[in-house]
Image (cartoon, rainbow, N blue to C red; front, top):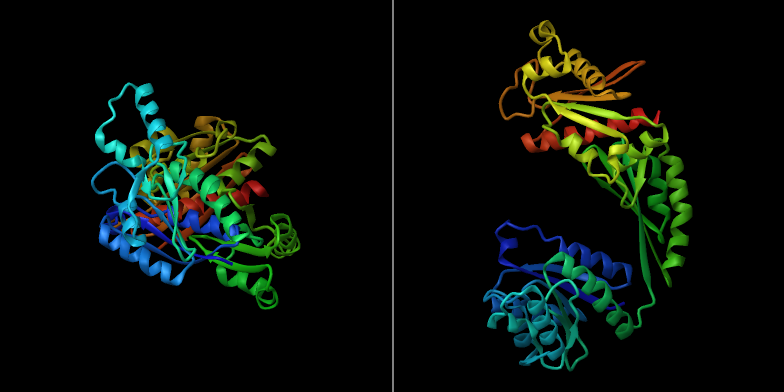
Length: 414
């Protein structure tokens, strides 16, 4: 199995201004194709440091994949650093230069001299087409048989170049025969410790596939990973383990792989021909935003009301003034009236409401920061749930959103 280290280039990552998602994508694709990732790194836009990191990585691994720093500006220094690390100079890749010139002609823009820099690649390297941009990638090799593959930092350019250029080259170069496939079961309503209790014997007995549990806020993922000579063989290894996990976690698995909780909710709503509306206070519309993230959500989601003030709660949702005065806005009674009010106001079969104290101020001994009430209203009656969440304001709002979606999924599933 060949080994690789991944190098993300960009000072903005070191300043916390940009989250490196490219390395995760690259690592996942390499793992699927039987390539061992030794380490990932982030380096700023410094030619000497990039070159030094590449040299050290090549001492440990068979190759390096860099992402970022291939653009036209003065701080795009990756190809120069690769040349330094490998002891070569650059040369013009004429097909890339012509393709770039055509792009500028078609767009009616003037091609500056610094754009021509993008068509330079290390001498003797293989150029990788960039069908989403102007900067080509490349694969440069050393006399010792090691390699450096460089792809852009823009995700829409990086992803096709990796899958259509770098991975096929790796498969041919190293005659890759191992394939790793994963299957992720998404659960809600079970703590990580409870999942562990239910599947502890599988942890101990399974070698291929293996399983792992990843905890998130109010939900957990159970990941199954199998290795085989082909993708189909790996998937076949996963199937019986997945079946057994579904049996043991029955009633708590809402989706697999890319299926999200909002997606699962809409599937159930459409199956039963029901519509939902939401009334939100402390979450400020994030529940509605999550539900509308699913394509075609208008078939089962009517709309939402962000009733942050008491006046909006009364005027649009019909919450009674005396109940606000007696119980407060963050209470079971008000949550129930919000859910019933939005259901009636928007004419849906289900109304979901959420009200709480996200902080950092506003909490009391009786009603501390993190207190949240959820309510679901239907023609048959209402259900409520009380939560006490921890974290800062953003964390409480995020956890409350997930909890509300989980509460809704449980009810709709029934």
